[in-house]
Each structure stands twice: as C-alpha cells, then as structure tokens.
Length: 461
Image 1 (cartoon, rainbow, N blue to C red):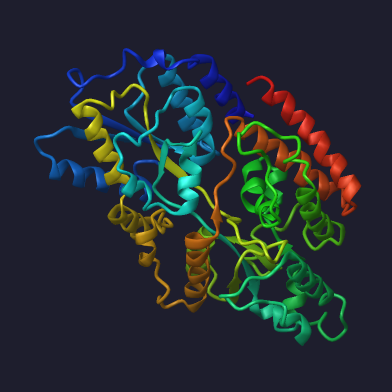
Image 2 (cartoon, rainbow, N blue to C red):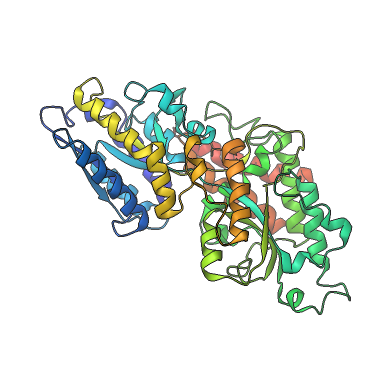
C-alpha cells in the first residue's frame, strides 16, 4: 500500500513538467548527480561506484558525476520516499533508478523524460527485447535497464528419480519447451510418491512436504510483487495479459477467456494441494519440495549454501504449446533521466553519455562479474558463465540465457501498476489458492470482482 500511495504523491506533486522548470541548468550545475536504490557498501552499490569512478577518470575536464547509493527498505519504499521528498522540494537528481513497473507512472506525471534525443537508436537496439519493452511508455524510451532477470523451473533430482518412466519422459531437456499440462502431470506424480508404498518410506520422500514451491507464501506476507513476477507469465504463455496496450483498459484483457483458461491450471495446483498458499521456509533449498520456480538469484545461493541439493533446470512452461511470443518472467531496475535536465544543451548531452556508460555492454559485464546481475544487453549475454565448477549452475544459467535472449517479457507498462500488482496477487492468485477451485466460472467471478476493485482505483487517474 505504501508504494501505491507513492504513485498518488507523484501525481499530486507533478501534474505538469513545469514543476521542474527551475531545476539544474548547464551554467549552474557542473556536476551530474545520480541516485540509486542500492546501499553504498553492497555489491550493487560498489559496481555503480566503479562505473562512476571510471567515467570521471576518463573525463577529467568534463562534467563530473556524483552518486548517492541509498539503502532501500522492503520493496524499495525507503528509496521511493526520498525521491518523493525531492519532488516536493524541486531537488531531483539528474539521473536516478526506478523499478521497471514504476516507469510509466513517473513518465505520465512528467517526472522523467524520453531519452531518444541523447541516446542513439543503435544503442537502444542493443538492449534485450524485454528491457526495451519495460523502458517504453507511449511509444518513447524512458528507461535504460542496467540488468535483466530470469526465471525457470527447477526439479530435485533426488526426488524425481523415483518417478515412473512415463512421467520422467514429460520433463523436457534443457533446450526444449514444455507445457503447463505436462508440468501438472509431473507435479501430480511427485505428490503421489508420498502415498506410493514403493516410495513413501524413502528418506527423500519422507522429507518432502509439498510437491511444488511457488513462493506464494510471500503473497500472504504482503510481498504482492512475488505473485505478479512469478505467475503473470502463466497468462502470457496462453496469449493473455493483465491490461490492454494502452496501459489503462482492463475489461476484455484482465478477464479474457485466455486468462480464465490459464488460471484453471493455477486452480488445479491449489485444489490438489500440489502447491500450498504457505510453503515451508526455503522449501526447495532444504529438499522439502520436489519442484520450484527458480529465480536467477537462487543459483548463487544454492551453489554457496546447499551443496547436497542435486537439481536440474528447465524452461518456464507454456499453456498454449504453439505460442511463440514473449512470455518468461523478467524485469528489473533501470536508469532514468529527470525532466529537470535540458537535453538540448551540452550538459544534457553529457547526461546522455553517463546514461550510456551506466548501461553499456562493458558495464553490463562488470555488473555480472561483481553481483551476478543478468545482462540487459544482447551483446553482453556471452559473459554468463556456463562452464563453472558447478554443473547445476551451468545448466541453470544456460536455460536462463536462452530465455533472456529469446522469450523474456516485461511486466505490464501502466501508470497504475502498484494497484494492479497488489490486487492481482492478493485478490486473484491468493483468492484462487484459498478457494481451491479450478472451475472456470468460479475463477471468472474472482477475476471480475478483482477487476472491479482495480478499475475503481484506476478511475482516480
């Protein structure tokens, strides 16, 4: 809710770009200021500082860059609070970071501006498709993603080795697609191991508490973005979407037949208790789940802390096996340019150079080396290490590298994103989990009720 209020504050204080008319100018300000949501002593903060130091050393006689890495709280509220305070005092930095879904609200409010006039199109074209999708609002590029992200499906080899051969055959190779129908059958087979006399007494099966871990317990704790990030691709993989291309229209999209059909799969998993609304803590890590949705950040944690977890990684499934569009989960933070900057000046051009320095191929490779950040640039994807000493990580990264380059989809671009994300997770995903229903009409009623609530919030815009 705090993030939703932040959006309303932006709209209240920034009803027009004129708010920033007295911002920094070429004559008044010889420094380019950057704010990020990272803490200064974190690896993320250190990698940004390294790029800034490099830029300053290479431009000793030009505009110098100063960076503030600001520790964020929770989902970024502390950092956003500081941005909002800067808005009220007309003291915005020239460059700052935003989470991808927040770009539309800041762009619509006039807080940030398009960057095509200071960033060559050839440079923009170097970003992955999902980063371009994420950074574009009303047909213009506003945000340059400094990293992408990725999600796949992981399976515990010590558990799936007990599956019947016909069920094992449903699990794809790392270079193959598969469907939610196939994943559902595998999940059922994993669950059946707990009651099969031939397997129920195996130590690995006795340890298992749930077939799948989808991190839905995060939703019950108020981390609504977890549901949106991990499970909206269920809709995309069936040709559906949460909202229309205009970023405002819900009816006909949020409650589309494609979405209802896709959500019946969600209902089946919950109805059959293959997934629980509240899973055991770190269920997959601790071998209490046979399958999980794996974010790219899982890889380094498993490598460092869970050497006994023998897992394999496969692609995120489709609902419609013939679907060939973008659908896998992605999105991250990005650099944006304040509307206070006059882009027609030499100072504005220098801001463009700094934006490119922060997000070019070399910096993307540095971010991966320093923090494991997934490159948001196509030519930098070759930095991903699939030849490490950990074959589990190599396989996971090979799957993710394919998705990042070919199938990643950005979260919805809409100025009401915080409202959309919260109510989609809380009033649809969690409601289906609690109802344990896979009946299309019951799911449609849940979806329509949530859509009406979201529409009331959207009407405020």
